[in-house]
Structures are given as C-alpha cells and as structure tokens.
Amino acid sequence: MHHVWGLLHHPDQEWRKISNEHESIGHLYLHHVLWLAAIPVISALIGTTQVGWTFGGAETYQVSLINGIALGIAFYALILMAVGFVGSLIHWMARSLEQRPSRRDCIVFAGYVATPMFLSGLFALYPAFWFCVLGMLVGLVYSAYLLYKGIPNFMGISHKRGFILSTTTLSIGVLVLEALLVVTVLLWSMGSETSVVWHFFK
Image (cartoon, rainbow, N blue to C red; front, top):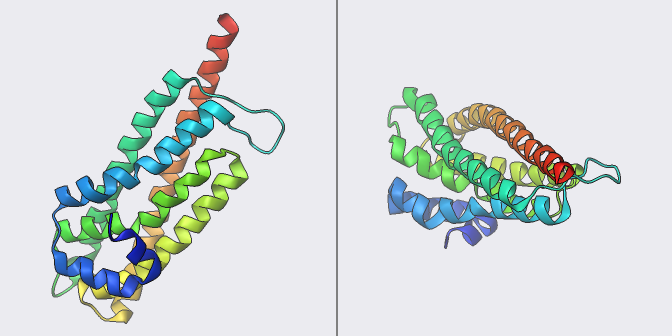
C-alpha cells in the first residue's frame, strides 16, 4: 500500500523502488491487490444496493443486498484473476527479450499498473452509466501512463522497446478490461432484474 502515493506522484522513482524489492506474488496480493481491488467491489455494492443503476434516464435499477454481495464476490474474483492474466500476458510478450523478466515480476508489475483502475472504482458509488465510464477513462489513462513509464525501468529495456511492448500490452489490456466490464455489467444487470422480479412476487 505504501507504493500507491509514489505511483501517483513520482512514478519513475517508485518503479525503481518496486523493481529493487523483488516482491513475491503472494506479498503483492496480500499487501496491495486484495485491498485495492476491494475498492470498486465495495463501491459498486453500495451504489447498486443503495442508489441503483441508471443509464441516463429517471429510472433506476436497484440490486438487493443478498444479490449484491453474491455479485460482488464474483466481481472481486474476476478482478484478482485479471491481474494474474495480464501479468502472464506481459511475460509471454516479453519472450523475445534478452533478459526476459520472470512471470512473478510481470504479475507484480501488472498489479501495480492497475492501481489507478482500482482507485477509479470509487466512481461506482454513484452508478450512473456516464459517471462510471468517466471514472474508467480516468483510471485507464493514468494506468497507461504508468505502463509507459514503468516498462523500461522495471524490465531494464530501452524506451523504444518499452514503447512497443507497452503499446501491445495496453491494447490487449484494454480488451481484457472491456471483457471484464461487459461481464460485470451483465452480472449487476441480472442482479437488478432478479431483485425486481423478487419484489414483484413478494
């Protein structure tokens, strides 16, 4: 958690610190990912159960607390798996490098790159579609900035090679993010519909 401010304020210096720590995957998850990944989950749980989804109109779709908790657990699991998947993807794409980083280092890197995306989950406290999209874009832009800043420093490669690898990683990462968002929206929408049906039959 102590790297969060550094990544937001002085990423170059912070990436060098992270690289020198040689952190394990377990330590990364226990001290960073598990905590920060809870931000979008808890925010979405509060927003969808207390405020309700809205897609721009006056109508809102509220999720029951029981459905919200079940969906939140599924959402949380998807986020944790996505970090490992993106890290493994970076490791696979770096296979042509002379000093290829380990899969562990790549997953650690992916976990820290996702920090702005985790923090942007606070936008889900007010689950209006346009507001959540805005939050996602803010998080995505800063995550991309961290990616371009971090790959040369973290992997010890030239900025040219780093730019190519960063661009490829970002493109595939965006696809992963889009898939995650689609699944998430479907899950929360199903929860909303279930709550409406249950309320009707009560």
